[in-house]
Amino acid sequence: MAKKIETKVVKRTKVEKEMTLLRAIERVVELSKDTKMSEEFMLQASPEIGLLAESFDITERQAVLFCICMEKGPRRVDYDDLASFLDVSNIRILSYASDIDALVRRRLLRYRDAKDEDSFDVPHPVIKALKHNEVYELPSRSGLDCASLFEVLDQMFSDLSDDAIIPKDLIEEINVLLKDNMQVSFAKQIEELSLSSQDKMLLLYFCHRLVNKDDDDIRFCDMEDCFFSSSNYINAKALLRSGEHNLMKKKIIEHRCEDGIANTSRYKLTEQAKRLLLAEMKINATEEKLANVIKAKDLKEKKMFYVEENQRQVGELQSFFVPENYQKIRSRMEQTGFRTGFACLFYGGPGTGKTETVYQLARETGRDIMVVDVPQIKSKWVGDSEKNIKALFDRYRELVKKAKQTPILLFNEADAIIGIRQQGAQRAVEKMENSIQNIILQEMEALDGIMIATTNLQQNLDKAFERRFLYKIKFEKPTVEARVLIWHSMIPELNDMDAKTLAAKYDFSGGQIENIARHYTIDSILHDAKEDKLAMLINHCDNERLDENTPKRIGF
View 1 (tube, rainbow, N blue to C red):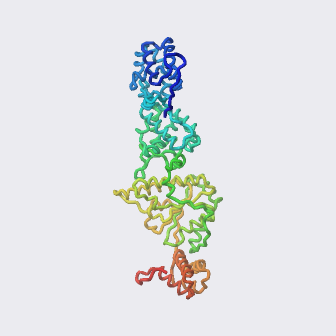
View 2 (tube, one colour):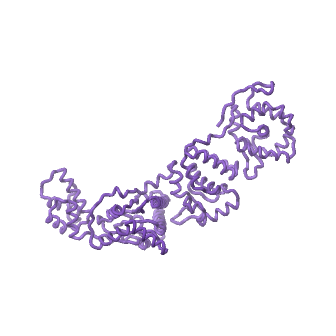
View 3 (cartoon, one colour):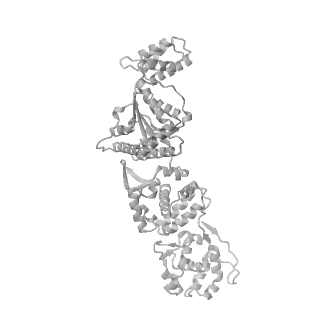
């Protein structure tokens, strides 16, 4: 960014009344050669030096040094060049090091190697501005939006990569940048983490790489430049490998996973960190699609009918999920060293009330439900699935922390992700499925909440999963007596005799009876049916059964 310099009247001498920046630099170079930067020279070149100092907002001595760097460079200028040009000793020229530092901070110079600061050059943007008689200005670094802030970070880390700035100086500049832009949620969240300067530097590098480079796979060689010293780097590598680094303890970065196994030399931001820090950049859009949260207050009451054993088991779970009981049991488990997570498996034939039971348990005990979209997790892109499942559990943990009552994590029709693992998997799809299952098993071990999985195919359940479910309830089809009650609840106008006839004739689940009741309701509305109710219902029952040996018509 540059500002135009208007031609101006120079008041200190009568030599020139108008002067461009390049002409002023040329004049200072002409007059300063072999002068040892004497007072006589400073006085003689006062108009030109004054113009440059005022325009660039630097001191007069810094203006002279900048002019010499333009002449001796603009590339590969060092202290020997300055000493030789001014005809001063190497000792004396080193006393100007603080002025060179100031020119670097002003971005009029840049170190060729920030680690030893022996040589420097004039950056191309500065030269480009001078060609047009303009002063190079640092881009505005306050009042930014999130995208603009990351644009500045991109330039800052580019300077670090080019050895134009050392890490300690860079973090000081970044701190100013964040402080000047606290209206940006990212800046505010970074500051609220209260990290050390070294940890903040590393975290900002991870965020920069993801946002600016679309890179979420960071290796040790990538992050080496971010450390203030070699010892810091060596120590951090050991902590990162072991998972003991502060950023890992805070669940901000984590090991990348390959086939469900952590790779201790590759790292990424956690999905939790992406949601917390990078919401403005829409980085976390994917995992939001993985599950839908249903509020307890939005669940509709529905009368459920079970066989006697199922009624007892569901009643016990309901008593367990009552908030005061749940907290007592969880606390006791924690005191005795047991896991505090509770995983339940509901299995049985279709339509036996597994899913609806979860909804009613949640409604009666005031718990929200996070319903997992299993097909969405099994992404067609190999590698995404593992990321998705970890994101899912991260999101659930956040819900647990924020919720008044621990929510329920529901994997509905979970056959696809808790089935028997493939032995000696070779194909990418098989490896992906095994990775998903390994991650779920690990998450179940660390679960602090309530997880319920439903399945119609319990015979395909992997034994490792079976052991991790504390409660396992097999939902049976309702008895004849229960079916009579279901028929009455679904079609209140049905008389006792017809309800008993249908219950005895058709061994249907509650879900199947509900389908027939819905179909009957549609017919009643569309056709204003006045025919015998029982005959109409029997017809619908026969179509529902889909007897393979006796073809039936399907439809209205």
